[in-house]
Length: 402
Image (cartoon, rainbow, N blue to C red; front, side, top):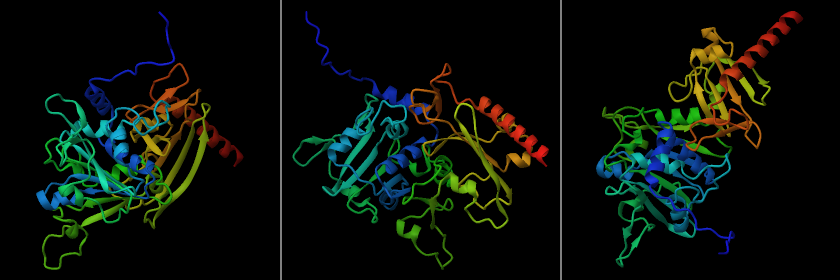
């Protein structure tokens, strides 16, 4: 028998639902917001907006989460390849620093059994192309719904029909995409998360704490509800304040600016400022940037970090964010007034065949690569000890010089 090694039979995947749900469990509670925002940014969008799907609000009083962007959009073949493939689809996979093409699916499908509807427009397909990923109630498997067409055939990707023809925001031109979360039954208010019980400020708060900087030329907005009295239509949400004494149901159209802006105090504050800042490079190549605030904090309430925190920065995203006293103590910071006003951001090197860090598949945690500790969590204790020792030496040096 002659062995041929120039070709192989591709490995098939079965039981994908178990892979999806395992990755889902590894992600954070609001991980899907990260995935949706990053997908939009990677599509070249200059405007991204999180809000309810207003057609369902007006028709059924159901507040489904919809994310819209003016990115490049996808045609029918791209939609099917990217969304109904577990793995790469239209994205590169394999390299530790690339998106794996599974994040949006694994963070959305386990709590949207009724479906995740994606509608996309391109100049070549101006009427739009639509796909609905959902869970088969009989088998538990995930996949694209088959729509029956006028000629009796079944297709996974179709032009939007009925109410789906009306969901496109007016500001999307000839290219863009919307993603709509239907929940497990189709009746949940998914705008407030998996169980419909999220914080009214939860979306901007998460994005402002996860994304470090918003790229130049990009605007991200959240249609944020002011109270439990929600608007009953887009016109009511964006309309004028009622003058007849009736309930004010208007929204706050909140812009997301990213965590860096709030560290620097770019919001309104006449009585506070960044008093000092610096950067310390550690022996493993990690840099620790720090900012110490002095005076009154900006009035940012609950939609960003109010006080200081410690986090790791990886490719414009913050990981391992924490503010516990024990973590500050590791860095030699014990005084409460300093802890509350000091932000420390670690910038570890990316692993490129040597020491560095990489994200786990769920994009929820960073891991070490390139040493005997490969696969372990970030070495916060080592970083804290070296930072504390170096800052102590620096303070002693300053005292001696004066």
